[in-house]
Length: 468
Image (cartoon, rainbow, N blue to C red; front, side, top):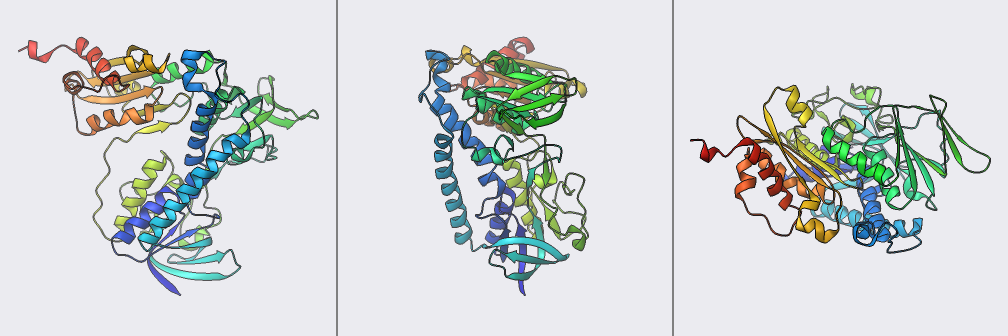
């Protein structure tokens, strides 16, 4: 039986970063991946595919140029599902190639197969070729990620009633689509297909969406969606989904209302992919959604030498935070010092338009009783915004009146997920409003919105140099 310092189950962001970190520290590492190729959900069905689909949709539809040339403008008049898939396959091949090279360069061994616990330190691997092997490990990291939640009441057929994994393999673009679930995944795909001129309806039992985002940003976002004729049916539950004889789909809501469409995307949650791991043999238990609880500083489970990282441990379930979790878990597992990550990390939602946020929302600042002031800048106020033909886009910063420090930065609009890092740096370095007022930003850029928003807040907060 082969013995390893660290066995990692799953090769997504948490698994691969953890494996490579342990290997760089001179440890013997094995990665077990049940998929056809390494990369996990992030590379094959989640982060990379959805963002590639988004970029392709925006490019081929001419979305970014419509501010100048009108809503009817398109780069390619007839966009097919094959057009979207072509770029996706090229991107995935490149991602897998890079990852396999990283494993080879760092001498990380990897096996294709399904893993399950035999004991707390022994795993059985059922390989694709039918062979079964056992491996022992001083430490084990579970980075198995999540899979779409598929309730029995939904008649999934993989053609017109699909989950988010199946959406990537559609044969043709629908003229109309209903998305059940207004979480991050549902909203991202809903807005991407809306940009392709599919008539989209979003249904969710909650009266609000994306509650962890600053409310003012969400109001701006929803206004943008409704302005382009997306329907949001909130506070109403989808009771029944069925396929009609004419090939259409019909959703019956709890108030008796009916929604008819060509395609239904069910995106109401995900579950941890832990059901096949035989967790009981290792003394572990998952919650009702298949997730594992861990120490947030070390990512140790209830069994000290078994770690879990990434989406399987729950919120925030981001590729970026999963990578850090995997790296920290691996360092702790092999006895290396692991610094706690910075308090504030950026959250990116790759909808159309993008949303990105870092730090406290205005609602959280109010709850904590912190006296504050906000600074706002609209992208159309910047010269770069004019050049790009942007009609929407908003950057908001929140500052403490007492310390003048930045408390939160919230952005909706083109390039939000890139722009947020300026605010993130200032936030974690405990910078104040004066940073934005006194520093020079490239002109013309969207980043200049930081200067505008900083001045907006500073004008109301007062100039300290004039108060003695």
